[in-house]
Image (tube, rainbow, N blue to C red; front, side, top):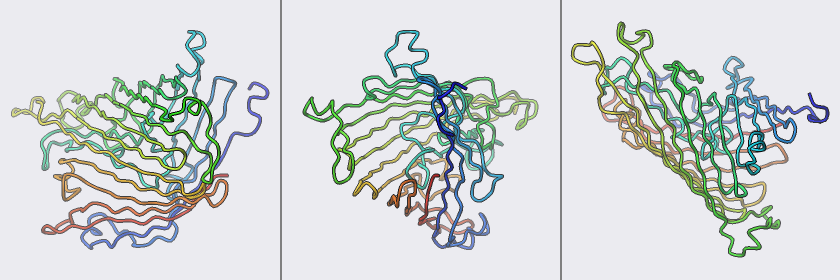
Length: 396
């Protein structure tokens, strides 16, 4: 430990809990999926310990661990845990400051918009989407694709990146273990190959006056004003999903390798410090295989694909009052055939309100108007799993 590098204990705790109101649940859904009460006065969310600090002028670390999730300590787990060298290598290579940084450990990918630290009370639907047919090759679709990869899960690996031009350019390249443990929820690489993730942003300051573009805007009724700017993004994830290692699905047959990718683009527009509009589109493609007629090997069949994204607006009425409006859409014919939705496209509309009651204490509300889902065993009957959430989120 270098003297003076950690002047205070760099540890904080975060806790959140919510009141939930769920739309009435048809009895057939209760039988198939389990009973969900229409109201829950206080549903514990997460209790998290966060440790973060700098170790000198060019090193930093971050560790967050959910000590309890949904009221159960057994459900907690490690989130991000990494060390980052800012300009550490670039200094010796004479690269300008901030242009070359290195991050190593377990971390959320450098997504166009974070999900681990989002202001929203629910996840971005496209980040949680998976490609799934049936690992046994039976069911409404032919194939073996069962890929648990989601952008929402943290990854283990190494990341190179930088943010030159005062942050208006931002790039990262990550090499990660990948997540392909069948039905797994934790990052677990059940193969030797590694996945690659690329993310690139380019932004422009839209202030007309050159002098203003170089200045920090003055404070106003809604807080410190930012410049007006716009950024555009491109990202891609390229991996390989390995199945049937050791004949776990098909005895006596070799491992199935199904390359896949996720690619898309995003934008982010901010008008001063009051209004921000951002959105993302993603397309996914998974190779898919099936048993040949003699059941002696595998042959390529129709790939599994989906697409979708989100559009969100945020307006700061006051520094302590933020209004949100978000749209999520996922188009997946595979999910419809698997009985998840009425149509290929699933739409969710989510207005919300954030209130900062005092420093480190935030009151939150959100209503989600969801898509139509089939009622199990019914003849062309559907219901919407709508939800109202309201609660508190605080750090100490």
